[in-house]
Length: 496
Image (cartoon, rainbow, N blue to C red; front, side):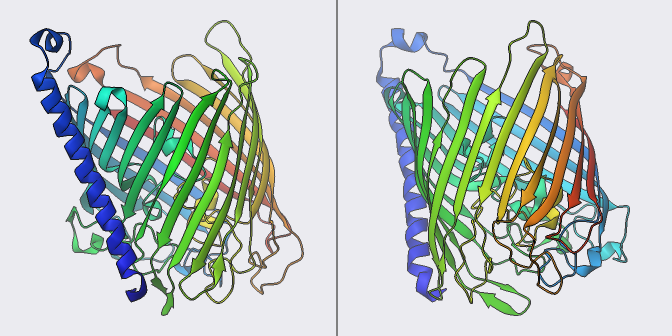
């Protein structure tokens, strides 16, 4: 820690400087608006508006034969969880929003409690997220848009990495969740992001973020205090802060026919303790490019490649590769039916010594995408390398789906999974020759029960949305078990 304290302090100074810059931009824009002619002011809507709302989410999750052999030598799940998962999750969010001119101030508090149907021999008082658990600060940020003659946008504070519009900067393999260890209970990060609109078709994003290993802005029971939010393994001490920054260049070349992104992103994982052993700091720099060629109105591609360079503080090296290729086909039909087909393959490099400080690690570091469930819900619990630590994987899949009616959507996807390297983690004795992990299939249906009228306000904007998802995994010879694993979830969300 002493070795990197100066770097950490330097990063915090940069973070504070960025926040100060955003505030100064806000003030300068306000002064500029105040000195403009009255006639110009009358053309702008500078009225102050306030909005308040909330959401209650109820879901049940069931899983069996989770890959990863809970309690095994390389498992993310401790032995007390065994192989069954069956619990209810109750999440409540309340938010408030103030809009004025080009600025938005948004805040949200949240709470999630869980009730376990399958006890697995664990006493209720020893379980996490028992009622009433805690209320915590989930979001609090200031946003400015179109500042300095529409040249600058900024957002500073605590906000989600993933939302209705997808992930930050549309980099799904880099940004999903700043607090992955609590699942979708929270998705926030503490970040300062400034966007420079260099031209009509290009922009430069710069950002700095800091993710504390625990949320100290909370009110709740003593049992909920000091809970780990970004731990890698079950049983890790809640002391692994993560921080970093980077730049993302986005441009729509050839009149929008070839959107692309270039990015350079740095991440620092601080040292942490696991099973009475201290793991060293890890520094990772990811350089990547993403291409989104639009061939026709119905056919497009998604191509991405990245290389990582890094090291541990004990001088061991780290660095992996990521590659992704997908072709999307959206045929045009009259009416509300909108079918699509997507064929993709994801490559995440592997290592025989993933996050092992005694050896060099060539496995892909998922950065802040550990909460990514687009490929699997089941493997969030069952990965060997850490909770949501997707690495050492080659996964081609075919996805077929359709949107129909208002807010109805259905898809199915299936494809085999392979290990990039045979690391022996699939077997208790550490031995293995096959790299075939198995066949994974998913089906999901989203549908509404109540839709609010357009421009509804007050009580009339109350809505109810649902989804059902099922996942089946038939393990291959990489694992020593041949028992199929499954994951099932139903969910009802009430919005107001």
